[in-house]
Image (cartoon, rainbow, N blue to C red; front, side):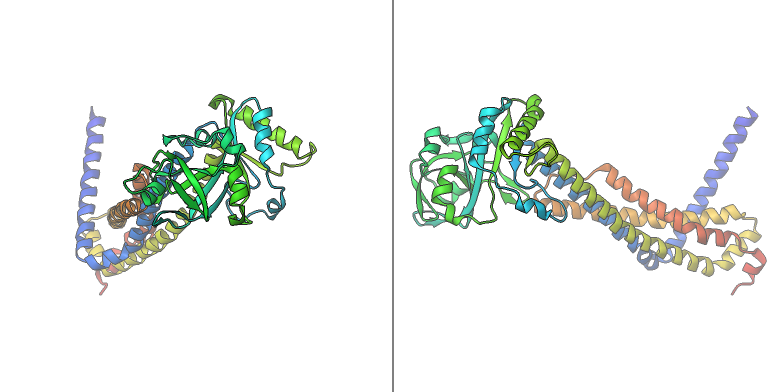
Length: 424
């Protein structure tokens, strides 16, 4: 019982000491408002950077994951070079042989776990109808499976047929954005548009997909890949290469399908067992892993940038606290003469430092949330302000206050009361 009362007494004394130290620290900060604000400016900037960048990066990560997820977990892409490259491109991949239309046909024929496959070629051209004309738009070439592979359902009209592909028919399926630009208040089905000076008949309109990073996903058209290769070939850039898109029979068979495609492509290219692939096979999960690696690097850069700002802020805190110790030397001497212990002085200055940095952290969190909301709205990113990012910002600021406030606090606590009382 006596021990319990003693413990309560110690806790009560500790609480009173902390409250008194906090009151003195707040009085000192209020008496030098401008100096206190300028002192924590580095902390404010650092925490603002952390909150803003974490929110924007997470928003981008969520948007990209959602976009890749829309392809389906059984999506597979075959390319000459890596589908997504980070850092300096490898020059060796530039000299790899191009993919061929026959590769897609072979994949459909010899890979039992592949449900659909389509060659994908593309170009850029303006599209016109009557008095309406678009700027350069993306023209994608594919076969009769392209809408199912990319989850692009035809909302009105029909999709391509094998006959359209084999006969190289000049037919086109329009994105919803193109329809709005060329056919305001009109039904486009059966009408003609001009693509690169050639007439194409509209056979279908794709379902609306909306925007991604502020850019419309509905401003493109699809035509048979055979038609693009023969009719629009002169429009193609020499840098554009053929790709093959495919989907497996189910999400459970995507890795088997991936291995079957890789084996087939190696055989078709005559690669020996000890030779590396001169092509890339990428699944949806592979694309997500690449973007996760990219965001990890971005996070590391963000931490570096914010750390520099917080370091500068911490040095500012330490300098101003050293100045405060000098200015209040006589006050410290009086407090010690009246019975204040070293730990009381130490606690007072550490708390003052932590309160300063927490104030800077709170202001930084506010600015960061405001900037994240503004940039997220501008870029049309999903809201991704996380609790851990706010905790990280406040935790960083508290750590800086403790780290850079200890030295001035120790210096203040070691002052000789007699020398301090005679300080002018």
